[in-house]
Image (tube, rainbow, N blue to C red; front, side, top):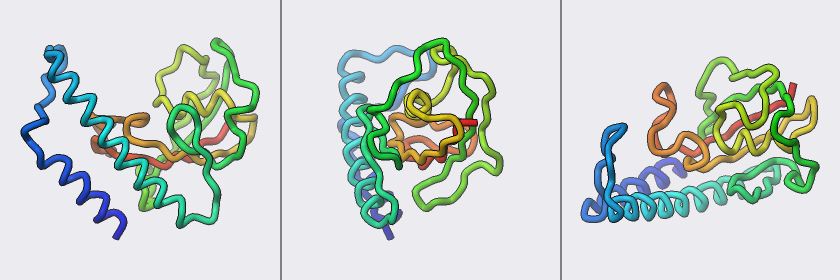
Length: 170
């Protein structure tokens, strides 16, 4: 039911064609007006997703805490821990789920000896890795703007999809 409600709200946002334009192809140019429309669309989508995630959290037995970057973690005072600096190494893995708690990929994404400031990861994962302790597991609730955004991952994750990420420091 929540999924149907969420999809319906997204559909309503998409119905107002007077204020939305198609994204140009890669390398294309947008006018300032088009950029402003795109920014407003993202703000509206982010507001809808935050409401959806807040309702989802209410039905969970685990508590989640909002991070300054606008995602949630399953560990209290997470952002108050010592933060790892650029050029430090970390090994980690994570699984990705949708908000129906369906695992999207069969195998976890795993990285060994990744160097902060030099690896390409979705924003929320990189931020959360800066605070994680060795061997620790944390669940992230991530709005689409901090996940794969407007384009998706071009594989199994569609555009504008908020995600649940179960992250582990190895």
